[in-house]
Image 1 (cartoon, rainbow, N blue to C red):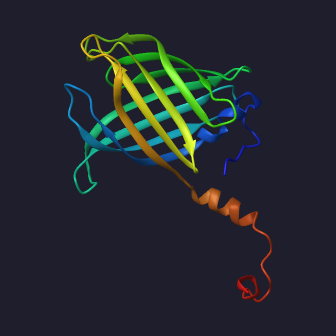
Image 2: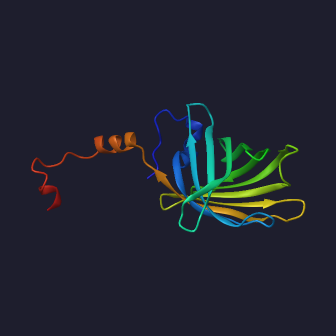
Image 3: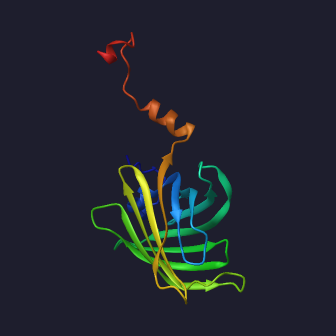
Length: 190
């Protein structure tokens, strides 16, 4: 269920499905890089202004699902306008800064993004642009990313399936909103 916080900037209501911390696993596969399974934690938060703050951390997993080492981290800011156009500014730990533009799909919680501008430090690897698709599917967040370099044309390179993490405060709020139980506690189950 998608909840809309009372202090969420009204402009961000269409992006409310992203809010929260999401964790799960995915696959990374790109020519010239190690193919691996990875774990990921993604957080979308807000402070009342007209953007969502985004943080993602991923790590390589071994065959048993244990963390081996960090894979990549990225942070950014997401906005949406009245025409459902989405813009994202993102910085990654490998020295890449990106500006993404896209659109929130009509009648469904799905966002298609493509890079509009890419800036790289001298230490970063080759990268010329990408595309991403984010979707809220059966209460889960799924995404797939495509990447291009001067040597490799645009192709899928990462995807993940993430589940929302519920905090103790959210559990307490859900409990406060439950209907009253019958006095004996047993009638509820009849």
